[in-house]
Amino acid sequence: MSDWIDVAAIEDFPSGTYRTVETDDVSIAIFNINGRYYAIENKCTHEDATLSDGKLDHDEIICPLHGARFSLLTGEALSAPAYENLRTFPVRINNGWLEVDTEAQWNTA
Image (cartoon, rainbow, N blue to C red):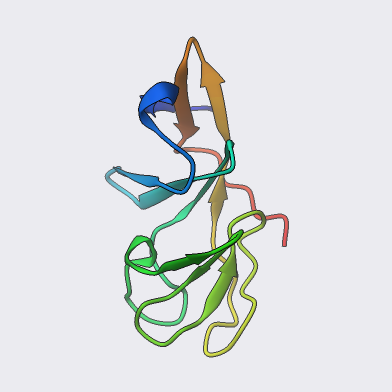
């Protein structure tokens, strides 16, 4: 079952920025990287750190706590101290709005 929720109007979500969505179960960070949108669980798999507070490096996010790197495309943990991949979520554009499916979970890594 899908549970698509609005994140932002596309016109209000420029490249290089992010938005977060909070649900009862999970915090999701959605990033716009050159007009492509990626949604990941907003919590490092190594320790309890908010990834959206980290630094973007092209299509990777660097955890602000210990520097673990994750792929925004796949959720793959790319460097220590994180070894567990992130959950990723589908995104779509619907009538000018970016939406994220908070129920489905992808992890292609």
